[in-house]
Length: 445
Ligand code: HEM
Image (cartoon, rainbow, N blue to C red):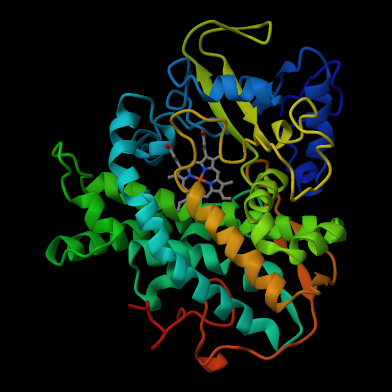
């Protein structure tokens, strides 16, 4: 492998996955951000042509908001170079909304946005509140838990599964499929190419079965909405729906799970903030949720490619140059945030870029994610108020997702509140059960 040569920035290698796992990326990115003019070309050795690292909040927004100049499609949105000619890769790149450019993206986004109206999200509110209580019920009597699998992973899975209308018994499959597709750089999760292909195949087959079911029996759910023509006669075709289903499963799970986990860790590191939040959860709800997403920044970066020459922050970017926006660095930019290393649940304003820096690709699920984060912390504050860290945290080995694999916690044991016997409660994420929150506890009303 060709050595990385970042002369003047010795020690900066943004492909060093071990450094990310050790959480050393903050220091590397800070050096890039704080060295004038804050935009630097980074050598990636054999990993790619090198890229402009965008680490300041204003620059990131300027790039994010100009989709015509900074394409998501030409080189995809991942830092990793695409394998040219690879069928799966080009299929994904052309059919995944995240990597579409306008006007194709504009049409597609108009259709799928119909599934994310405030009405659709609000319909999920009571259901998810109920599920939050059940998730906590599973651990409350024990007095300890593995936070990631038992507390933070479950609600995002249940939210998407419920939104799309996946039967209880099938919910654990989504967890397995998406786990097979991401985490490829971590030996604990890495799967063979064959396993990844199998996961794709199974997910698409499942998605196709869901579609044909709804075409036969329309329901008041997102699938039916997206498959039915709107006033302009627009609907998703079969492949478009498959890709959207895939994106929902991947985009909505890891992100929200890691926000909840890292947010909880933020509270552990700043215990006075936990006391403040518990003093009036309703008062701090909105600002707490934004601070959790800023603090966590689960999507570390997204890539773009310049379609023309462009001057950004006094730096000349050339047509075809690769650009990597580092949301994690921008969300610690001292130009944008007072005391950025303080976890401050009352922070106002909080103009973070955790959901993107604005523009056409801004996170479609942000309102759903915010609701899930709010419900989870409200539930934990009520039911496990003295929750604390009880061991080492294990981080994901990845330079794309700021993931946490495990975080042991303990708390004073308290009785379960649910009428549902504990042994009937399965889970989509936990190792203990794979049958989902099954049985008679179904959507109310
Ligand atoms: C805290 C949790 C989440 C975070 C931090 C997050 C972050 C992001 C980011 C950074 C983007 C790209 C924005 C851009 O480039 O401008 C994005 C896009 C997207 N997110 Fe999220 N996300 C979260 C939760 C969700 C959830 C729960 C869903 C769906 C159920 C979702 C669905 C999507 C979709 C569909 C896109 C693509 C939008 C487009 O290309 O137009 N996300 N998200």
